[in-house]
Length: 146
Length: 299
Image 1 (cartoon, rainbow over the protein chains, first blue to last red):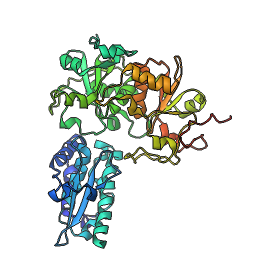
Image 2: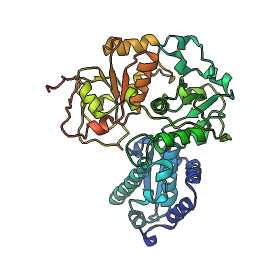
Image 3: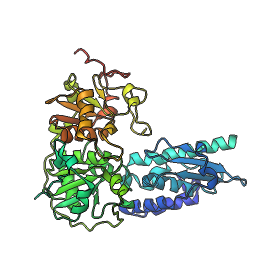
């Protein structure tokens, strides 16, 4: 994956993870987990709008929207008992925020595997983030088509 | 010297009450020399969000599984791991975790493969401790590394391989997966799609008893009478039976292995950790679909 296709926020997240030892990567993931914003009020009462990410072991739901300026925002909710999943969602929610749809589509599908988390949390668990990214892109396609 | 056993009345009903402790007991014993409390969860970060004071973490993915071969860690690696957690060969280890002790039971089973003598589960696990408003901390304990001997792993007593299961057909098998996985409607647990298998269904003659039926609402194990009603009356297990339990990768069935072995006293129970991800992809092994147990195929 080359730097030209990777949006700045996601590239920075990757650099931050790779600069750390395996143990500290977990701590950084926990920071992300704690930073996952609450759902915007307009979605809190509409669980029907949210899509369950089946690839994750814990109940995590995402919703992607395109604002009036044509920029992308991803919202996610996952229980406090699932900090790893929350961390994954938070990395993507922060990394996708304010991108154009084209930039989101250009994010390489193997971005989650490039964060150096395989050793820290296991490759199997990282697959949950891949599922989340794929679903975010598909939702975005649906929003644009609607 | 082992820390004395929990003498709570509920535990006394079980075949091996020394394998369980209550939250009350643990709250009293925290900090006792010779006792090491271990948290083992599905979520690798849950421990970091808060754990029982003094508890160390053991992660099933990154610490108990071999990173390359589909197997558990080597004897050397296990010795290194336990020593680094401050566990000696004679330590009393109490394991607890999330989701009705699902992964805690798995860790306990792996400790058993290495013959660690005194290893117990916290009845009710992490959720019960929290529900009772007991203390949690995010402080990681200062662990004094100790020497843990390199002991040979014994896979013959509580672990079954695929060939063992083939040879076992005709004796009791328990499939602890969801009803949908058992009947063959799906190859993965609902909401657990990662580990695939090429074919769906169950091993012929296996009885379907989803693992969580052994847990009560509060995450503790069901009473002796309730467990007897499920495994003896309903499934038909009898004293002296050799039993093999399986699930998808051998974790949920560790929980059932614990119930059958330590709570009900069956002493010839093995966990088939290859489970459905191996059986459902193996060539020419018999498979039954639907809700019936099915017959032993002719050999």
